[in-house]
Length: 316
Image 1 (tube, rainbow, N blue to C red):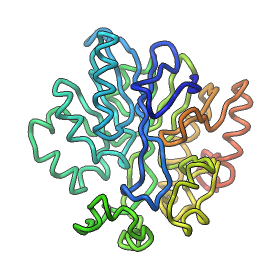
Image 2: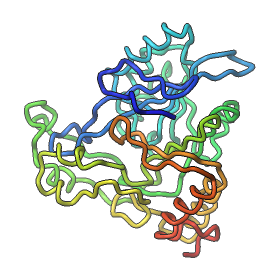
Image 3: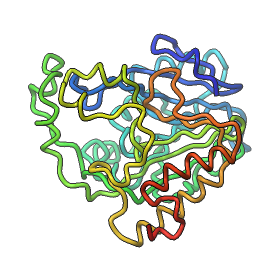
């Protein structure tokens, strides 16, 4: 895929034949103290026996991006029939998307999402619930019908905190976005909740899109926009690495979980990948590009070797 024309100001960007990206700026927890991230949605032209030709969306940016996706529908004369979230880290804008696309099926996580305040409220609404498919397995059965164009993989062995804490009224106000993020993060509990991270592989372009069981890939420019000096000093730039040994999220805590995860990752190493990107890198920034499958396996396998995730037995 070619992201050279991607920008925050574009309604959408065509990055390959039948493939489009909608991009928006995003600050974790909506705080200026955090770095500025991209928040992408990928839209693919797909065809199934049931729905004919339509659009499949992967990722869930904020509700402001809805108008951009609506414009793409209009320009292509195609409807979005399925929206797949990127996993448990992105669902706070889901109500807006559910309301804007009443005839669309949503695919999301059955792990953390149903236990969160937002998830419970959404699933208590029957009109929402009947349109949401909750998945927890690596092979994501409901999305198999798209595998000739996009393959999806649900990593389900990593752990994170159970739910983000309530923000006080002052924390929620736009005027208080610069509140000490470290103080806020200290309210978060232990990482003992399994979560789903949904990766995708676009077959025609051999593009791999990764999620939050890997570190967010940030440029120096992104990190520099964090108003917190402490965070700027703590955060690494251009860091292509797994979260397996991080404090949050963190890898499996049992041998059974390690073996399951490494078996899953072995499937990714079998893919013929030419480029890797995530949902949050700056517009135009690919994490890695490769000339061959061998080059991909050598590089990505080396990244996984640092945490033992290249071992299909899970014993490292």
